[in-house]
Length: 208
Image 1 (cartoon, rainbow, N blue to C red):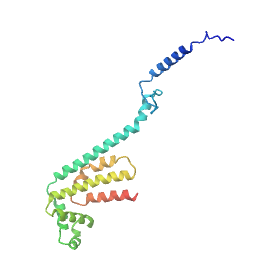
Image 2 (image 1 turned 45 degrees about the horizontal axis):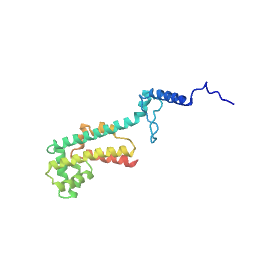
Image 3 (image 1 turned 90 degrees about the vertical axis):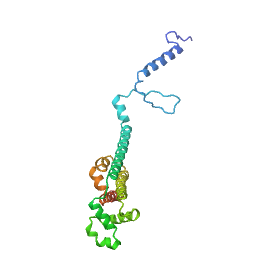
Image 4 (image 1 turned 60 degrees about the vertical axis):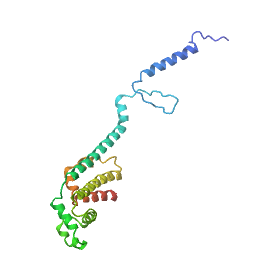
């Protein structure tokens, strides 16, 4: 029996036409180079993706980088502002001098008996007393370093709190609290305000 192949296209020509058709169809989608097969010998372009769907797909990654950048900038700003406050603080003001004068009494029993003349519990006074034993009671610049260290501790516990609750970054607390002028001025002073903030935030994180 003889097969009539005159009506059908040549097999080679059919293959060439098929390849050309596929090539033209792929050229239509080159504006969105979405790689779908990684590790293959070559990459092929996926089905054309609308712009809004492509943006949604890239959204989480872009947002994560934006959050990390904002958190880093806020942390750097909080540290820098505290450094400026510590270096420009000058001599101790009245209430700070009162705290230093109380903690440098000859004995702890004297400090305990005169505790009514200060506004903070004994723990903070013990911290200042230990620090003054190292740097001396008449070293105002060194006490500014103590306040700066407390300010850094505030920033640290804010990060610790956020990570404890599996939050990405403490953006809100850094923006509204860590760089607040009131927190920097009073929290970094040689008083117990900043130290109390550190203990409260740390306790909240550890309780959960």
